[in-house]
Length: 216
Ligand code: CO
Image (cartoon, rainbow, N blue to C red):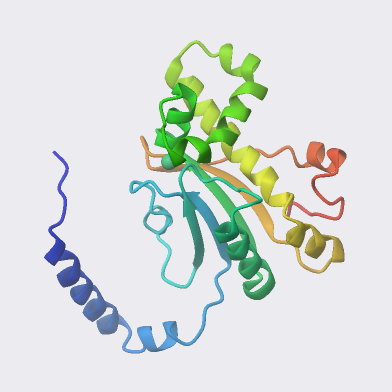
């Protein structure tokens, strides 16, 4: 049985945590509050089981974060687009990470076609991925393995969408600023991050990735 905190405990935990931080470094919050210059922009799923700070042991100030159901990168999502704009123009992050996770309710729901309401609209792009990779997915006999593969395909598709954001394309083409872009899957069954291979050369040939983009 999983333990859930009581509401009051959240406030008490916070107070204790702040005291501990100050104990280790009396200037911790003073320094933290001065500015942010995070090296990483993280786009992940809203799922409560995937707080990436915990999995990567990162501190406040290191990750600029955007999360939504099934880690979608949508060209019409003002929330995402403004976060991307801020991350690349102002923060000039060194890395952009799109991260999915196995057992994702959004991916599974899209696959089984049992999401209703706005969630169904939101995950429509995943249904397109299922259709365009039908042969590959149908060849995987085990359903869990098939959903895992779909989760990976979703991440790769969303990374590709990142490259399609005109702001970023323009910055890369102008040269001088090259954020490295990564696709991850968080395996919540093991707690480990899987860094997915990305078909960057293929995307360059398609014209999606500027030829000047460097992977390293
Ligand atoms: Co999810």
